[in-house]
Length: 98
Image 1 (cartoon, rainbow, N blue to C red):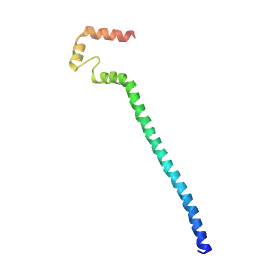
Image 2: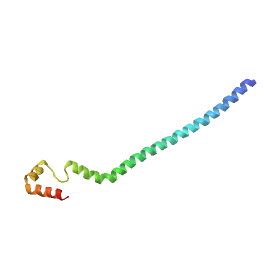
Image 3: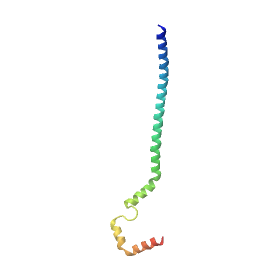
């Protein structure tokens, strides 16, 4: 084997080793990136579920207010309340007192 071929083979071997080191670092980086991504989404999902768990009593009472669960249950009840003047006067007095 002549000198030029031997030099080219050694250079090729050196470049191959450097390439192998870079590829192994790249694979390691991708594995850690995937672990961090799973942990990131787990934190987001678990914190959302935890926030919902702690806010659930407030949300259920708010939904009850909007659906009519607290107070007046139907339009008929409103008309009865408006028809009864003594209750309306009591309501107005209580609002004026505040």
